[in-house]
Image 1 (cartoon, rainbow over the protein chains, first blue to last red):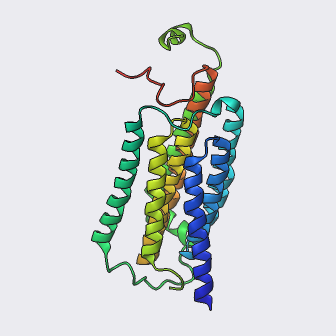
Image 2 (image 1 turned 180 degrees about the vertical axis):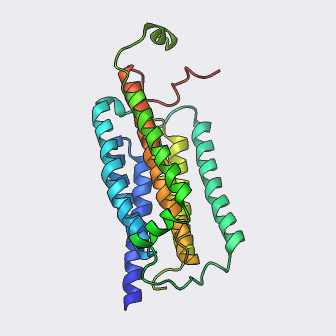
Image 3 (image 1 turned 90 degrees about the horizontal axis):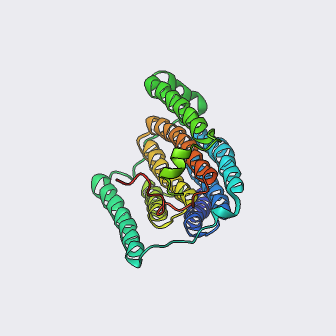
Length: 182
Length: 102
């Protein structure tokens, strides 16, 4: 019975995930795309919970669906009507080439995983209740992965400085205008 | 493990990655290109967490959290670029932004 319920939740979350992913790519209005991405992130959080990754699921909802997507929606609202551009463009060979490249990536990933790990993926390791808990993640971050933790903080700092530099130029420089051909 | 096996999760992850790649390749609006990039990163994250569950090892989850931090940084810089484009009255179209082309 419990197994059946998990299957139902998995099927719902997986199809919501794939459907909203396709919706993000196909909507012409970026506002609706961003809303679809929030659904995508939420259904992914359900999949993470099924994989015993409680902390990552919570961080996904808080950081991604909360902070990052709110920032996205702010910028889309700031840019306004100009955000609506044509769906796609360019010559039709570009479209065909894009679809072929996307399909090639899918086949490549499936073949790589299938060949590299076929048959050995089914038997999951036994895990205890602490697996994926905030305490376990915190312990790993502050012991085995301390360097990654510190580097992540530097990456975030550099990104914050870059965001201020990119967004903070309000005055136009004449030479820049000339180089842009206007 | 109750419910589906790890290969099904990996299939979902591959399809998510390919969907995001299609969006990055086909769409010309930088905002939607950024959203598609998020889908690609999340596909990779799902694969990381599936493998972490398979191996019973928390390192994959650590990597997923680090990827989320990198994704947040990428969004900050990408949205900064979009705002800068908007300030200069440039068209939001990645095919038309060719000033830096050599």
